[in-house]
Length: 250
Ligand code: MF3
Ligand code: CO
Ligand code: CO
Image: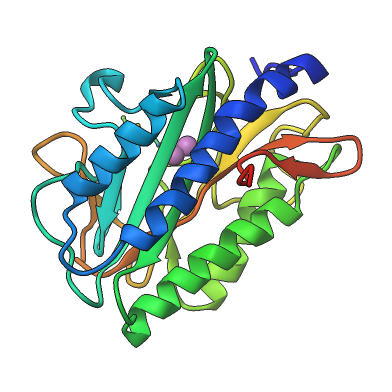
């Protein structure tokens, strides 16, 4: 069951969505060689609490930290640790904020120092994949149109799209219907309607699509240990297209 949010619901979601986006702006200058992903976690946690928000990942199905930090070949759901980032790494920071009971979910992959050629390739492809997925969103388009646009582009760049994890409806609940696959056939799947709110969050691997779940039951890595990158926005379908909700307030 996919809920249709009212105009009031959308207004109520804005603070959480703005805050999640502001968190990525806040964190960017800290992403440097020598910082640990625990440091990123603490900065995100404090920034959220100070705004009167709740970091949604903390204790979500037992997740132990306040943000996901996914480094290099980690695809998603990386758990912050005391290991330092080094020059040439890439790190996805995935922030979900709850304010007044509503969720905002957004992520971005950052370069640590100067990117290597392969890192830049996979990160820029993931960035554009999200953009192309968003460009499909309007009433009457289908979920398959989103997945298709992303898959055709990424595979055309000779990279691959992760199948096991997808975008999702979001609101008072962190993960709700629909599932937004990042691959598929144009014209298939559910028709989009104004008021639907969901994320698009393609994970792009420079190598093969296959992933593996580590023993901690959270960390997802590429099976071939090659780089993976991801970007995510929360958006609402409008009468004419869509509006990205996870934009900075400033
Ligand atoms: N923010 C992730 C998403 O985009 C979900 C993280 S769940 C967690 O859907 F428990 F790992 F935080
Ligand atoms: Co999400
Ligand atoms: Co997220």
